Image (cartoon, rainbow, N blue to C red; front, side):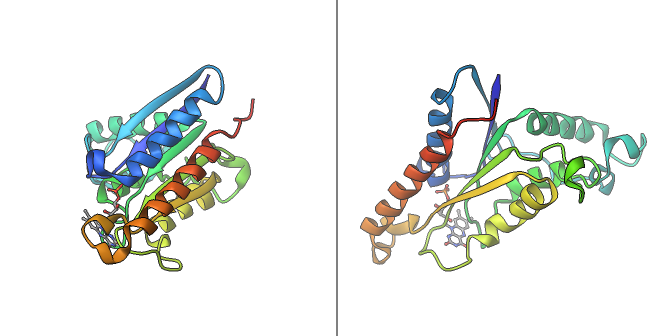
Length: 208
Ligand SMILES: Cc1cc2nc3c(=O)[nH]c(=O)nc-3n(C[C@H](O)[C@H](O)[C@H](O)COP(=O)(O)O)c2cc1C
């Protein structure tokens, strides 16, 4: 059975653009093939702790029994199992202060383990070739390269270190309802374009 890991990190609830985009991805993906399972991890509603020990950045088989909180290691086990079991991952990553939300960074810090999830030799990468689709949004207008402030660390870890097939879908001007100078019509057009793109990506067949 194909599995989607659906991750959100926006604090904006029903008003969130990234939640609307990740939901559209999940809804399209669910019906795009038989026997599909979606696992949801809402990093805002169910926040992960900050990394408590550098030992958790070492491969589990090599870290020994001490030097970390066993409860946090058990939580990391669950988060890693979710990621490793997924065939495709959609990640809602809003821009917060020119970065990703700290809730999402806490997830990234738990799953990036050199020598376990991350390898320089592609043959060793357990996540190699799996798809990661990152949906991002910012309040003011898009600028060249600005999305990389949010998506750059995700790209470095998931695409470069873990070998995942990485796509970004972006929208901007989401504050046009409170800053009319941003142009509500431009904001709506951008969101519509981003919606079309996530649906197109979600409809792609998963490898058998
Ligand atoms: C804490 C916080 C920080 C933000 N920082 C920025 C920022 O640096 N640049 C920007 O363009 N918008 C910023 N915004 C606006 C959000 O990027 C915008 O509301 C976006 O739509 C968030 O994604 P969401 O709709 O999925 O919640 C910020 C919003 C919040 C709540």
